[in-house]
Image (cartoon, rainbow over all chains, first blue to last red; front, side, top):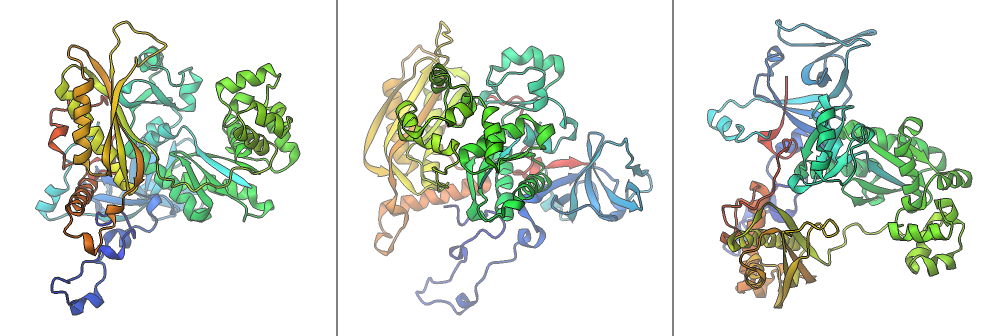
Length: 153
Length: 427
């Protein structure tokens, strides 16, 4: 029904591929037609477990994550040392490096102004997911295009 | 064996996924128009917030305990539901998954070795929570009805069961049935439960001891017999095909504020007709009958008929159609018939019935210059545009622009997973 509207990763039918048949003769390129590159296919490994977030702080600038960047987060990946993760710490969702040294665990910012968050017995902490990609938009008109139009309450 | 995977307080869980501050806190979700409470977290249940009660009645309690309250965010719930079901399809194979409702599905476990049933059930629970953030309970038993019994007990005794209960021996089944009242058995309504109690049948176990003939005679014929078979551990409802086309398509809504003028009613009815026609086209059907009804606001509030009687009428079309314009026209005529000047209305609805497969959809070579085919193409384009651009960017003029009848949603959370401009912030 919604064949030609984008419907998510890898759900398309061959009818969505345009052919040049206005003359009644198939163009030679028809035999070679295929679907264009789809960022969802390249950047999303596990669709039901993948979520988007927006970075709202400067804690990770030295890791190349700037305020306003969009993060792709995969919940099905396990947090391991040196991975960048989203974690819930005391009621907030934060992005940090996950660090482990033997039995010691902590969250580390990529900005010297921020201290480490030690993950001790009494820290209310839960990993949320692993950051797999950062989308950093640089063209101003594209920025305006995907800027928040209205934000839900 | 069959498993049922059921999300724990699904709507509340969806609201919590992106809000750590609400984990382990009382949360409620309100129905359309913020009228009733339709979902409660365990913590909200524990402080005594009742189910399906009107919001205004529970408000003092909600304010006293600072219960987080949300308007229903069906965009979010629909997407999260898809994620839960998709996770199970990936894990178990899609041919073994039968989606039963927005938050529950049956899993055919025939291929799972008996010794691994518990482990598999736990794996489903853990994987769904890891991938989606939604906690689920799993009941595993020889039949669907028994799996529901198991699931209910797993949910009621989260600490002891860790949300998984396996009924894999006659003894375990017997114990579970003894701990389940008849009214809590899937398919036993309040009325039948009353009747059963008169026969001194109080628990599911008592019921399971009756023979099939008794069930047929006392529990509504074949349905009752099937229920008894299932309780006795004999499969009788096969894994149904989940995607059965609907025989009736309805779109009804309460107005955000009561409405007095025919213009607003017509706008609302045109909008509902558009939505219903979209649903119709999505299942490649056409309808021959369209009914429209409105519900006037009762002056003297009668709690027995909370909505008051509805007033409606229907039109039978010469040919079944799925075209929005062909459905809006008779709908508007019906509104003209049933509208009474001077009354206040609180609800309207549209129902499409006499549904048949729409053959004009498969446009063929001989049909290309057919007007019907062109219109059909127009609908399909409109559906595509509205699907990809969202927010009904293309509307029929009759749906209006004022929309002062639109639903109230005072506590709406962001559509975190379906809108680019509403994704969750992180620090």
